[in-house]
Length: 497
Image (cartoon, rainbow, N blue to C red; front, side):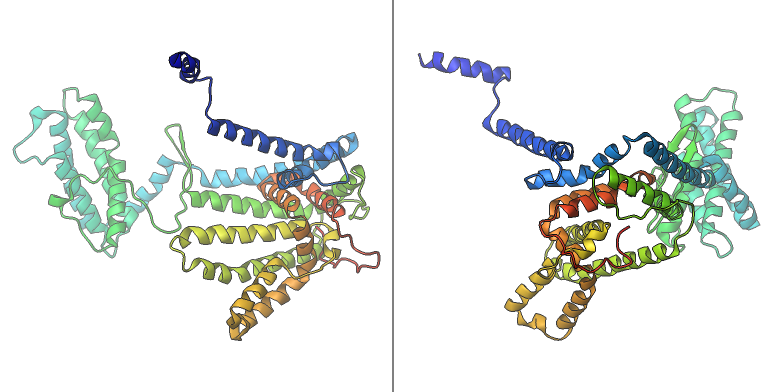
């Protein structure tokens, strides 16, 4: 009877149809989070004039708000045509710049190797070239004996010893005062290629295909090993051919900031170093900023139309757009950017002091500094609207309140340099106290909007998303529970976008 009671349950478990309570609970949590995220993202289209309830819903409401505004605005055919015309022109200009960059930096590997070869012929001394030629001849004999065992002589070295001797000779010549690293490495690599070529063609027998394929890449590997030996030795050490072994399997890893351009070799595209792509996207972002600065009038017009389409008072005046440089706007943007960098830098000493006694500070410091940077991104995203600069302020920012609370426990924070630091931080944050106050009252919606703005800054997405970020910020400020009074002062000249 007892076995019959438990048999159905055992069969369901073995068949996989019955899940444990932990899996069911996790699945319910995922469904709950997904439902809240979807509800927040759809809130603008279903309910206007009120924030959704819950932090997750508010975050996704702020992140999706620019796209809802764009959808509503672009429903008008003339506005959509103007928007596509402006953004496509901006994107085409950026792609043209990227093409020029690619044409100047993406080069074929063989072409890149031909230039160092010409330098090597001019840089190496005749005595050095003679020593490399002798080492190359020894390598040719060793390769011939490896490819065709019947042709080996008694004094023929092995391939490993011949390669080590060639590498040692090239490293020794590369440390001379009148030779360069690239010259020695290139000469050794070209010599090894020629030796492998002659070893394959001077015998009447057919070499083994695998050995022949390895010999073709021998020159490239030797050149890499020579560069690695020169860099690791610092131009002083000369490896011993008897103990060096066969060190051609390891590719050189350069230290420091190393910009390696992408290459195309035998139909394969190599990405290059991460430093190259950081430089590439940084340059493209700077070009994107210039494009936006020249065509800002068109974005202002689109922002005005987006405000009217979504039922909010426009902050941009009616104007006839044209391509120009608005120097007052550029000055205001640079001043605000500098202010953001100063505010971010002022918080780093506190972050360093917090993470100093922690064993895993190498991980915690980047995490906390990134969170501090994202906080200011949220604040200045809120400041994209003029309404942020007249938002009511009822208390100091959260970090100053925290400083004052800690100072009541640790009185030395009110003395000497600590007091000066608090005064500097207070003075610097006074100019942005209104945007900070508005973010503290609605942190989650502005965090979502800041994330959407951050993703939208990547080239060329900024050309498409920029006109709608200030309008989205204005919508969120209109939902602030504390609205400015009618006699509130006008926003400063550097307010807005």
